[in-house]
Image 1 (cartoon, one colour):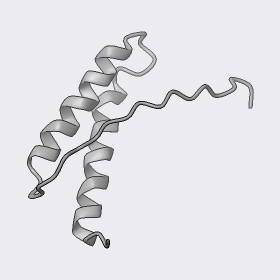
Image 2 (tube, helix red, strand yellow; image 1 turned 30 degrees about the vertical axis):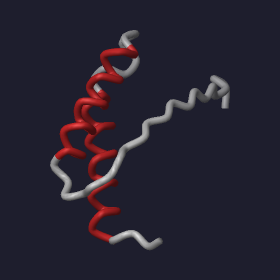
Image 3 (tube, helix red, strand yellow; image 1 turned 60 degrees about the horizontal axis):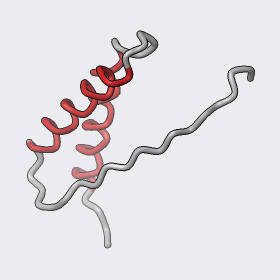
Image 4 (cartoon, helix red, strand yellow; image 1 turned 180 degrees about the vertical axis):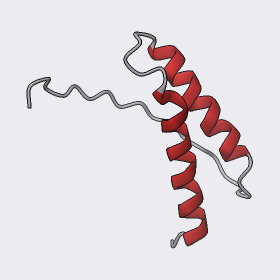
Length: 68
């Protein structure tokens, strides 16, 4: 299966906008608000793409060392 370059670019934009929209809430101690901002952004942008399919969301929690 090959993906269309325009679709790939659109999905990158969706992800980037989600990150930008939740950035203001990072480090404020309200994970749910940051998650909602990203999720709402992604949902809106994905609904505006001309695609027919199903979106699966998966949460992976990664703990990184604080001292690098």
